[in-house]
Image 1 (tube, helix red, strand yellow):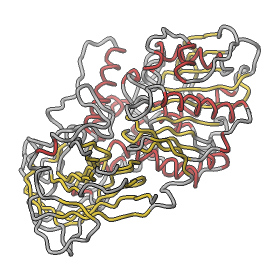
Image 2 (image 1 turned 90 degrees about the vertical axis):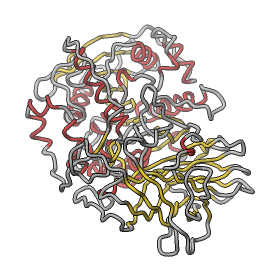
Image 3 (image 1 turned 180 degrees about the vertical axis):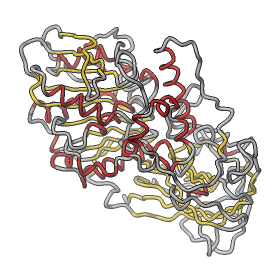
Image 4 (image 1 turned 90 degrees about the horizontal axis):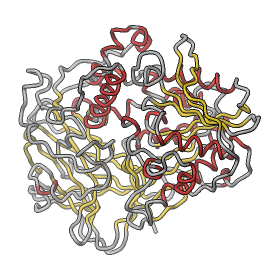
Length: 594
């Protein structure tokens, strides 16, 4: 979702190409079909139902056609080398490629407001495409992040759409705006500021918008959810002018907004999806949910959807875990071109014979095909927290094992919102100076407000592939607080690599619609969803689990004040983590037998 698609998908492959289709062909590992010079039309104005017109660039193969079409719809601008190169490449492959500025961005008309217009505009745009003389009636959509989201919004009850290729995205944006009730602060505030800057520049204003990563305090008064009336918001210029900020304070208000929650729409989707995800991407959890639901609830060919999950963070299918920086892009290129060749051109390739899910298993750094998720052979195994009450930092006595705890003292630490645990990698968008992905956690584990529980060195490799959840029994001196968890792989040389993390805001432990504060000192049970991973802990490595109360600026920081006294009222919370026979705190690992 980054402005101008910075760092996204093909940038690394075509940055030096100046719009050269041959470089895209080389980067993706897809032989270029020599079909003559593409026909290019810029800023064709496509009318929407309310007469707003959206600027659309067309790249057509020479010849009379008709041809299959691939459409992408995005708010980051289409007049750049990425889309020029990709458009020429797709035209040389026998596809009409269309790149459309979404409403209120760049050369399109109307007012921009994230997400809310994409369902109607997507349906209008696809209906227009299939009526054109150069379209053979087969229409696909391509793109990632926001321009993957526009695919999902275009899909329900849409006979014009044949197949889609959503990358690093989800139809349920709400699920990445909030994790366990906490705001994905760096990602969402950072992205929103970039979009506000883009809109100011479009309007010729000299305002500067930058995310303030020195703030990010959460201390809203407690109240039940007040659902947003999205139809009213779409028609009210004042609400549009306010932007999304008023929607970011109470997750229950937007939980069921149709444009932010795709759950009701899987059963209305017929287009098969080729989903591409990353183990370190902000969309990982919702995207796995999309894949499972569209295969079970989707209609017709949607049940044939497939998914690829690589060792990637948001942006490009390339990582240090793979043999080369090109191996991921080439797997991706062959995958989505094969997908479109089958569904849009009717070429009999091996698409229908492929496994529904392909995953990259870190540790052994290998790709593997699987038939289901979670894997049928999974043995869900409880790893319990242990200590003599001194698990603070990696120098403490925290341990992790499959043996259930007995009579053990609680671990304690103080969470000071003005000195939060800093973000060090993880599954989020990543911003300048705040990188996502796999990072060494040794500095984090030196802190006394980070509890660390570690297994002994493994005698043999142990594969953990599938969904992850921490069950935590904890008490706080505050009325509201946060609990965080992070699974790590500790190598014999001491390097600590993060695999996945999660958070739960205490007031939302029982859901978003009716939040409740906690009674200070009372032990409560918390479920922290760490989404999923695929990793082999090699022999000699150790499994580690970090527990704390902050991960900033990835997540906004709880002031612990329970909504009293405004954002300046900051309380230091004394935290206790229990692990005994009555309160067996643990992480459930999806162990894959040999």
